[in-house]
Image (cartoon, rainbow, N blue to C red; front, side, top):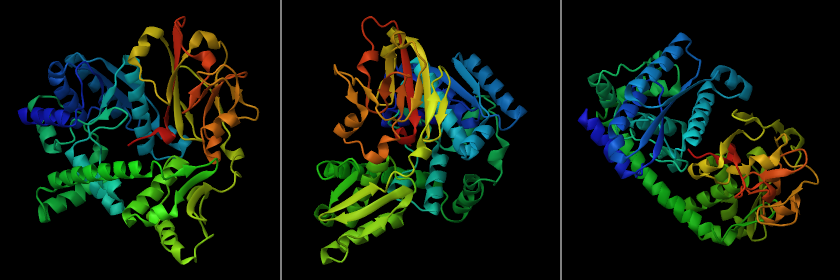
Length: 475
């Protein structure tokens, strides 16, 4: 028992997961990992001066067993005197509507729920229960599928959005023993015991074979390897980001990379610079494979012979690369898909709205102004003077003639000119969500709110709107 508590304490301290006075939302499924996490944090709450809130999402995938999971979590939290929030979502139906797997839909809904509770209680941290075995499974699964340093870095102990994993250096066997010693009787999901998913096959078949035949300490070895790779990868990312700060240029259509700059770098750095430029252009690197980066690298390194000047390369999702004079130019071909990407959704308070065209989820709620001090505002979470609006609010993409008064300005500005001034790539402009009424724009999401709707000394109630998913996600 003490070993688990000490290991969790060391992990919390090692990664500076908590600060005195933090409010923590703990994701609790009812299984051994999350039950152990909640129980340990409850024992450590006075030591770290933290306040805990539990959150449980019923996925409705396991019938009566799922209902029993929720009942168990509620009873456990009452026994530990931890406030608990429980919600049910039909994940199977959501996965069909969004054309994604049940696993992905479940993860999206869980985190959306956790973040909603965090906003509601003023928490800045969300603790989830991945353990050392999960880390080993993740690294092995990604290696089998094929990945680079980023993938082999495994699960991050601390994410930039406040998600922390205090059990990441604790093994599953120790967790199960802890639950048994403390009479916690966690719930068991029988699907975890069947080799029906890739991760389950790795967990139940491959890793036991490796442990038996090759390395009895494989779980610890894989977790330590992931930690070392993560540290190296973080250093390289920072190095590349600092290096390209004054090298990349953007216009309204795409990104320029000087060829001379690329040729002066190691091949590994060339690949990372190109991948980073694509990430900046499209907001992520989804569907960009090693072979695509390698084709660009080969063209760049053949440029000094003159044979590739003016040549071009088509990439996934309508991206295109051309060598133009002394630059590699990355841009999106044409705007033929604009009509298919148009969207228009009414905003509903205290409900999640999924915008499939941009893969983003929107939540909105009204709160008293004094609660603002507990709400972390950023590019994708904003506060508005609720009493000034008094109209239906919609989420849409830009329309011809759009204009608004950007925060800090007196007069109006055309949205088109606003995008040009900020060098927003043309191919991204139709995907920028606009929060608006029938008459006015409230917020150009990710950029600026309308000065007319800002909170002032006279504000009584604030409208909080948050966008998550899409270009705002970090593993």
